[in-house]
Amino acid sequence: MNQTTRTRSTQEWQRADAAHFLHPFTDFQSLARKGSRIITRAEGIYLHDSEGHKILDAMSGLWCVNVGYGRQELVEAATRQLRELPFYNAFFQTATPPAIELAELLAEVTPPQFKHVFFSGSGSEGNDTVVRMVRRYWDLLGQPQRHVIISRKNAYHGSTMAGASLGGMGGMHAQGGLPIPGIVHMEQPYWHELGRGLSRDDFGRVAAGWLEAKILEVGADQVAAFIGEPVQGAGGVIVPPDTYWPEIQRICDKYGILLVSDEVICGFGRTGQWFGCERFGTRPDLMTFAKGVTSGYIPLGGVMVGDRVANVLIERGGEFNHGYTYSGHPVACAVALANIRLIQREGLVERVRDDTGPYLAECFDALRDHPLVGEVQTCGLMGALLLVKDKASGAPFPEALELGMVCRSHCFGNGLVMRAVGDRMIIAPPLVMTRAQIDEMLVLIRRALDRTLADAQRNGWL
Ligand code: PXG
Image 1 (tube, rainbow, N blue to C red):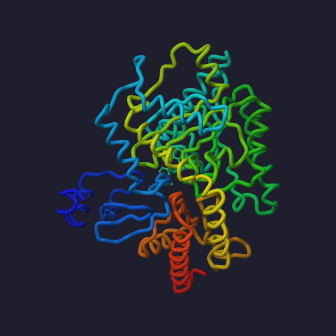
Image 2 (tube, rainbow, N blue to C red; image 1 turned 180 degrees about the vertical axis):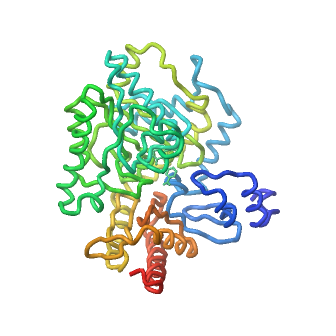
Image 3 (cartoon, rainbow, N blue to C red; image 1 turned 45 degrees about the horizontal axis):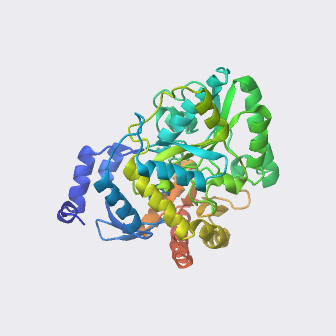
């Protein structure tokens, strides 16, 4: 703990925070009234706050701390690189060893069509690069009219102008004049809301068919690409039926449009495969990554560029007028190298696939008997529990009750970070989590559900 952390009380932190720090996605006034929770340190899968509470972090920071907190290999890699060469750019025909080595290692751990990478500083910037690159690709092929990118409602692709436009969040589009031109949205593959009359498999095919309908509506010769998260993360851990992605791939192939897999959350082991596209059986042309590439220890993002696009950009391209100061930042790349090697050495992807992923699925399944739980989904080390008013019909609670937020407060009060997306309670814990820690998490989750149920009964919401 550093000097300032020791010498300020929680209230002093909160006062200074409210006076100067505008937090992301936050109602500033309401937070200033309540005061932030001040997280001061972390170890393994646990956070510690300024009040001395220990909290199980079932969200891996923000879907990113895949290898857990306090990993000395990553600290040492950063320190070594900071001493040797803290920064140099990659613009003017220069490169640094960590950036080159990371590019090489990424080509090794990603599917075989990927031999090239374009680095950014975050997932949002990565998706800005995707928009620039996709449109540049079709320009170079003499089809500049192919500029429309199809995305999905309730998708999250970041918060820059292009990232938020690709995303399908109405609240974000309502601020700042979004989406930018040439981005259109179709419905998401959310069975519980849109497919309840159908089997999940049939619904998966129907939902993928909405892509073909959208392509025909826009005009097939106008469409450049389709982008999607293998599993929608911020949208509420919406796991599509297994029939969905293969059909999306078939439709992309049929019309020759590029497939972009946004792997910012699903990448680096989250689904029990290195990348979500491998779990769901697609062959994307471009793949956005961030978060888990450094386990969040330092910002880094980028786009894996498949041969189809890379060959055109390299052979016919001339200069690509795009890049960031921190594209290939040597310290970030050194941390990513240490992080990926650690994931490999500890076999974390295989552990999620063969052991902790199936175990989490089993434990979540057992929550189906809870009176509030209407739907249960997991994929690797991601999970969602939908709170419903009526289990038989799946009828939701009135939105105004914000039952998810009630449950989330019980989690916090109980030493557990779990997110609420509407009434979907979601988790994405560090991939180093053990079976014993999953058991411990489940005790906390069940307790929060029971307390939420007691509130609902006491207030006559059921
Ligand atoms: N794509 C996906 C799939 C993401 O989940 C981004 C892009 C943007 O990455 P950056 O690094 O620019 O934030 C993300 C980010 C939430 C939440 O509430 C999720 C994200 C970010 C902030 C909040 O679950 N994901």
